[in-house]
Picture (cartoon, helix red, strand yellow):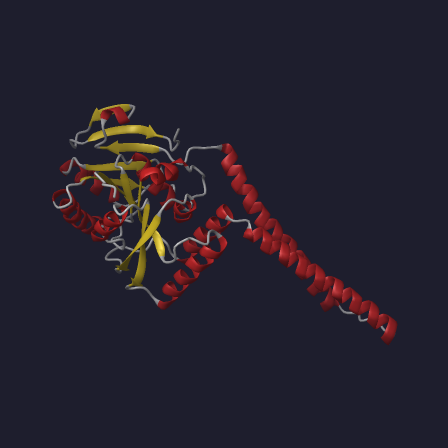
Length: 342
């Protein structure tokens, strides 16, 4: 049985000014229990992913009042998965919990994740057994999303589990070492292996603000995950191309047979148009899928950093390059991170 002594919470924030006061209340209560009752050292890392509202100003004031709160401001919006990666890169705990800042990943579940990890598991993910406050359409598309991802990415990919999870030990180092640009963290945490377990929880409705993952973003995430982890889309296109080619061959045999045995030749623009659309559409679809893979190769070959850090608040001096004391009373460092890990 292993003992977790220091816990890091990595929380990406994007335009959550309405939710942050509620998050602060819940976090302070949960962190206090962890520190007092479980005798854990806890650090909270908020990552501002280029928010355009007053989220960062609120986090600055919060960090000024609480020196144990750490804040990272990215130079622009890099996306949820990259912002979460930045928080995990900066974490110093021997275990890291990743969760969203909208309180749909309730902080009180963290204790259950810790208890499961201390039983000997390296990765403990929270699985949603209920989703409150969501429409039938949202629930059904989410159900379909996770089943498709499990089929296309990894048979061990947990169903109904988002990015709310705890990672510790060697699994954490393995997880951090994966620096691919098109990130699907749920797939990465499954891909690394190690001992994994789950904890069930009821996902509450969003208390304020609006979801940052509408349908079109979920579709984009699904496509990114599928093409980053699997060659199945290429296989599907190959099979479809074979079907279209087979259909064309059968139609050719039909036309020849009709000409020989019936004595007439079927003429019609509709037949030509249908065949051209089938064949042309298949070719374009295949090119699109192949192009998506080539584009990802292009991004990886350039080897750009995952993100740039513009400002850090309340981090140790040795963790930064240009360090000074701000007017608000919190420690600030600028351009201190570049998203690479050695």
